[in-house]
Image (cartoon, rainbow, N blue to C red; front, side, top):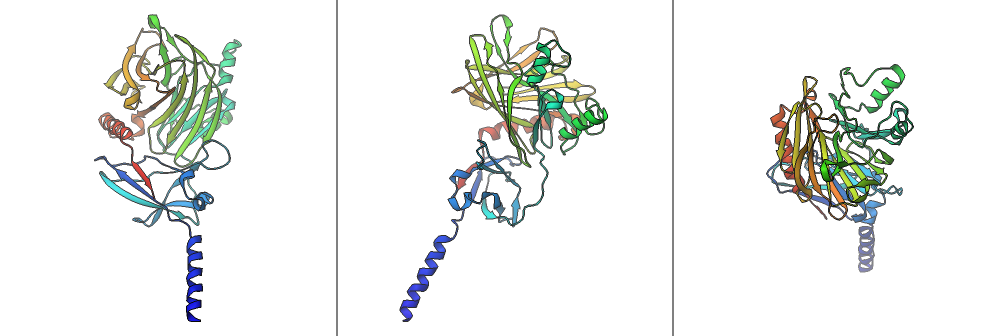
Length: 388
């Protein structure tokens, strides 16, 4: 009798054990002798056991060393109603390893969506995006139509605009609302920063171009469609479509996916491009009142900007880097320094951003350059992820 009860008890233990969720640990390795901060780790939800993926909205990233949960964010990349990625940002010491666990998080704190983007139909279809450090915008179809119809207020440009921030909280909605409702211009600094960067028909702070013969440059017009994929505490992610445009050797198809993560001065631009195997990302030389700093796949333009310093940068992975060149005919909106890039398998990745001295985000320009040099190394040597 005792033996029978023991067998039944063991059977029940086995049943309950089989129902217990498979534990999941995320083991990270930093192979560099550099501290890693504000680097985003992406976990594919499809690779997790079904028990975890089915209730992913209740799961957090737990740090056993700190007995605390990290801030995390879920992203539905393909917009099918199901989450595809779980992202978080660990801090890792130089040459270190660290293990985190998936764990049910009963209550999640309210957190600010520092990483934000949206279309602004009240401002002729600007698309704007920001995080805690920088902000950008580019121009949409309504602005192009105004020009084509001979009306005022429009612009035809696929250049990228910089919004200069002094604060770490979101300003896009605040600045547009103040402009629309109270007539307060965001082109003037009211204590939080301003938009006083000129784009015009230039490439601005990282737009694309293709160089043809006789110093002729080919560019796309305004984006024709957009899709906001994610906003949140750690990442904003969106897509921009462009009408096919003429290149030196035929028509070019272009589609961009842009992400901007918390704590980063640079955004990541992933481009699907057909019709060319080379393209250049440009920085406008503005009034030719700055210095070009050439570090191979890292291109910096440090300029005097209304009694401040604005330092624009384009950075590419080594595999996409080809060369650099300057085109400076001393004509407004046509003066640029370019990072020349290789298109591989109809795709391209590059990074664009800036540092503004009034933000006090870095001690000085030398510290900014050192940060960028480290970032270039980190891009080539990502944190290694092992899910167990």
